[in-house]
Length: 252
Image 1 (cartoon, rainbow, N blue to C red):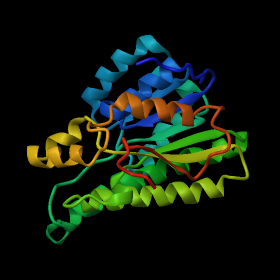
Image 2 (image 1 turned 180 degrees about the vertical axis):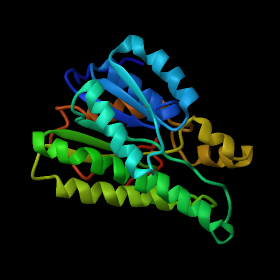
Image 3 (image 1 turned 60 degrees about the vertical axis):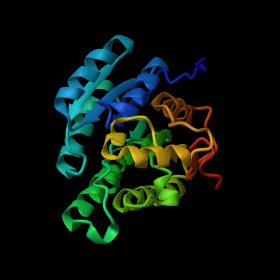
Image 4 (image 1 turned 45 degrees about the vertical axis):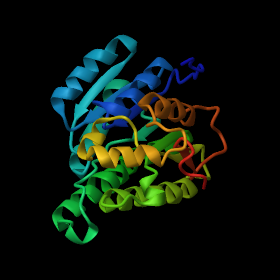
């Protein structure tokens, strides 16, 4: 696949959930575009591997933390800016799927954990960096939501509810920051060919593919390409918006 040239030189990005899958692909694309990138993830082992793999591409740092921990996010933000400079790009990618069960069978503590990681974690990261972005009058925030937040996915209600909440957070924050050059947008992919598919039965995976007119799962690199553009100066007038990467599954 031929890549467009996106110039992010001079910018510093934080990518959450960056140790694998979509987050890793996004971090790679931002580095290839010239940004300095801090990788945030809970999995310290996978994070170390990602840091080693990406270091040849540019300035990289890594922070292992739980983004639902307010103090940990504040400390990681401070350490990142000390290492790489002021953060002006934030990609909230970290998230968990939760179990595949009927809504009425969902464990309450597990439901709360999915919401905490997928929504509260993104909120805490935004809160850590938005004031600095506003003060400098430039910033880009990209929240990785999901088609499930628009359409809903049977037996996956907590995940869909959390991504719908992330979409609403994107719209609210985008409007709040519209008096500056801080833009806030969301990407809503259809299912990607990542580890999350391992949770589903072969029958469910087949059903998921059949929902996509293109007839395949989206590749992480395709999500990364759109994300990189949304992080750029060339994206200058879109905020509070959703950008589908769904192979035609969603038309609204």
